Image (cartoon, rainbow, N blue to C red):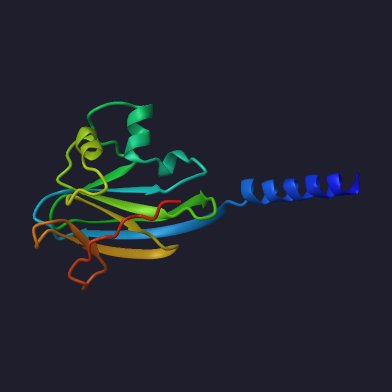
Length: 161
């Protein structure tokens, strides 16, 4: 009987630590478009918990289909423009990252959905809590995003969790 109670207690503690361990994080983001074409910047995350402010274009398309880029998720930047957002706060399960997606020359929701993670017209940047500043470029024939003064660093793949 004692072994069974111990096993149940351990299972309960494990579930409680997995289910209830969402961290709250805050981000400030600045993005300058030095590319020759417009970009759309979209803030999302790689997992849960689900929050409407952090939904991906794919989530948005499922919830509210349509051809327009919604103002609630993406920011449209013409060449030379800079956008800042923040503080933006969200809850993040263990192992989940905040991600800034940058899409080159996307004018509609359909364009966003058609530009996949391996496209040269998309960069997924994992953010760190606090201040994040980036510059977009297309000088080498593809989209690059990096810290100011870096010349643009193409983003690596967002880690899967």
